[in-house]
Length: 375
Ligand code: NDP
Ligand code: MG
Image (cartoon, rainbow, N blue to C red):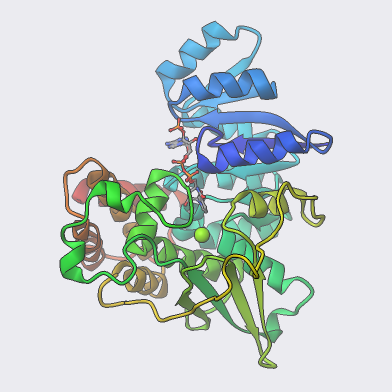
């Protein structure tokens, strides 16, 4: 029986992770559940999954839950989150959104817990620290992001020296094919209407700007220890091929499946085994009978190259990119700035940033805060 600590259990990844855990009750058990503010859903999850402890980042919500469940350990705030990931679990599923996922990843690995990592912002901002820590403690990181899960699966049994390049696929989001002029008028509702994936609000907007794919380039650089020049992006609007690896002999391996996050979550939780699934894979004779691949429109969707540039400049540049993006996406969702204001603001933040090489954890958090305050 694997005891799983589910961080961000009330979010899109968390809820799907709990489905996988519940459907495999003979293998998995929840040790801890965590949320930010949504104690309404957390309450239902406590009753169904009977965790040993929960963490609520929001203090008020945490105190309310303590009164409601006097027999349950209810930890509060970031200190509570660090305490929870520091105790022993067989695996931590990190489905927290944003840089808030960095410290729990760090302390989880530091205490030798393996991490099934959906939270890409931890690697974007602190990849150099996180990967080194995983190596040092021997606690593994298994990617949950569908592209990285695909690459992880394609790399199984192959030597690092056999790899020529990684090919990340991108659906293109809801605005594929649109011009800058058309993008200047798009609404929040349109941006939240992703054609293929159902996800949390922040990553859905990141998918519409293509920042998500940019963040994934940086995520891939750290997870698979590849140079940026060996990481390519192709638009694949059917979202069936989740990513590919080209090897030195000219072979390309790809991993395919329906766009359903339960598949990579299930793989990460059960690795190195595979679990029998609730659904079949894609039927090529019915749907997706043609698979298309094309070049991203870099001139229109500027976030893709901005992220690559930040990654290549290294040091604290990805921290600045990420912090600016988080603030600007939030503002767009609140209707305060137009859609194109996101890429314009990120570009400005990057050009104003004075980079620090090899930032330590405390420096990353400080730079993140400074960038947020300057936007
Ligand atoms: P959601 O917004 O749906 O969920 C985020 C979760 O994190 C919620 O449980 C939320 O709690 C919690 N949370 C938010 N802020 C904090 C905080 N400051 N401290 C502690 N907990 C917090 O996000 P997603 O599930 O869509 O995404 C999670 C991560 O996984 C992201 O990094 C995303 O890029 C990545 N990812 C997601 C995919 C998807 O299909 N959704 C696919 C691939 C990667 P509350 O509900 O209380 O607000
Ligand atoms: Mg992805």
